[in-house]
Length: 347
Image (cartoon, rainbow, N blue to C red; front, top):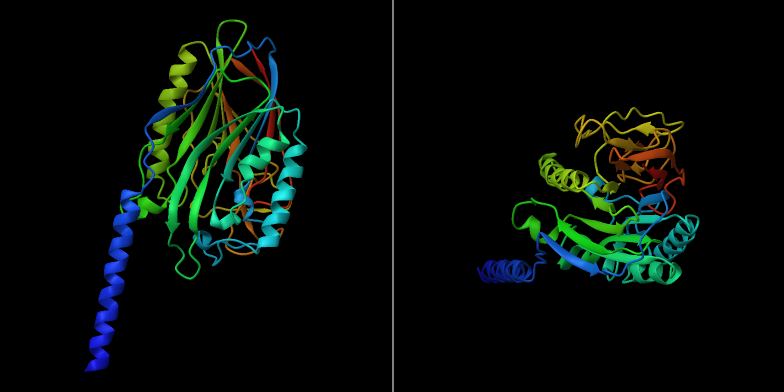
């Protein structure tokens, strides 16, 4: 009887501690406003050029290299060993350096102070390496302790979107996407957002560059809410006569995409496409169908066996001409995503 009594007391204490943890996490939960100004500069240099370039890459917090599996994808791990993360960071910095001179560099899953990346401030490293660029940050993950997976908790996470640009932004704004998972899961998940940079043009209009990272691991309903919200922003900016580009990790395939991968197989599980004609029929989707941009992280990457897809790309308003688009095959060496680059002209 004493053993049973002690066991019941132990269970009760654990339950009480867990309830206290949930209460604390809920009170401490990062709850950003719908929109907030990150940077404003009314004296930004007016742009007279008309031809630009942009690249987008989800760097996977330097923890999802080709050797990794990930618990959300059916694997078991959260991060590789510390030395592997260090190698991934150096590889990411070297890879992004290949795009030096690109007008706009849009990055996702950039950690600042997270256990999963051994508290390396990757954002600061990128700022230091690209000191000639203007940098903006949109936080979309700020949790004191993520208890998942129970076998190896992710712990503290601070991460978000980073936009680097050679042109000087007049304004950088963070917009929260609507919707989230139900409580208590919402406390420990990302607060999805997009980062909107505005650049003044010589014709009196603006170039609007949006860096997005839409939801994953939902039934599609969250992503639909996000797309509906984003649509209103895009239409409003275009109706003002502005030039609008969206790039990033959409976590869904673009409308009209048909894979032409050379060696990799196409991932059809949980396949989701953006609806045709979004946000209007005359907007342009920019993607390279020959190269996958994302792999399923259920086990280490193997060419021809690991399911892959294309969920990283750009969307251009009708007053922008797409000159070319290129995907990059990095064998998913440093991240579970691969970059895509475009050249474009403002008409």
